[in-house]
Image (cartoon, rainbow, N blue to C red; front, top):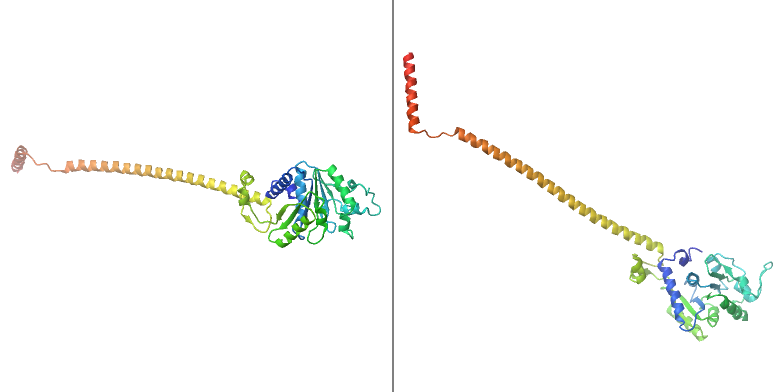
Length: 341
């Protein structure tokens, strides 16, 4: 149950939003006429009509509508398994007026066959036992009576009908409902089959509201360009051959956020690194300036010392008086030596 009802288990996913869009379109499509009964069918089995019927019913219930989902696929009904309710008795038992022995039901009151689900405002009538003549049961007068009773109790009645190309059940029901939706599968349903179904429904006086394309490869980038996507800011690549879930969006959106954070961290680290490098450069420059200053001072000191030494060792030319005194001193020294001898 929980895996198929994505509108219930994951109401914020893009798929759930698409079902809400479908619900809104159906509500405003009737113009002055209120749409109360909706038939969901397909061309062939496996295109997703039961899944679409169930999730559409959930979205109407979430909008506060009293909804009953009628499993009109009397040959292969499966809504009982989707919503985890008792499979029988169901629609076929009401229409035939036959129930199994030991079962106490008022076969003349459709309310006896309505099952309550875990979802608020949503009820299900299962298909019931498989009858030998499903098409004949659907044209029974009890069907018209059932429809009148359900309209008086519920806001929305959704019929999950069999594929229209295989049996006439969908065409029979299309005559008595307000509108019909045809579910097709992307790159699986043939256009000729779709045209045949549309033509058969219109030929009996039915109204086709539109076509639901299921199994559509979904690009969240395109979805992101919409108002909803821009608002929530999710990011994701194209998903091929499957419908995207909210978990995919969440993980990818989370990855995008982390990537943005990493980029911010990287920018911060680069900025810090640049500042650190600038500080290191300034520190080196200061050290070099100090070394150069010290070297300059040392060089100046050495120059001063050398200058002093040069001054001390430099021979200054003697004047004539100094030369005369020197000669007199030499003469006196020489006379002293002679006298001592």
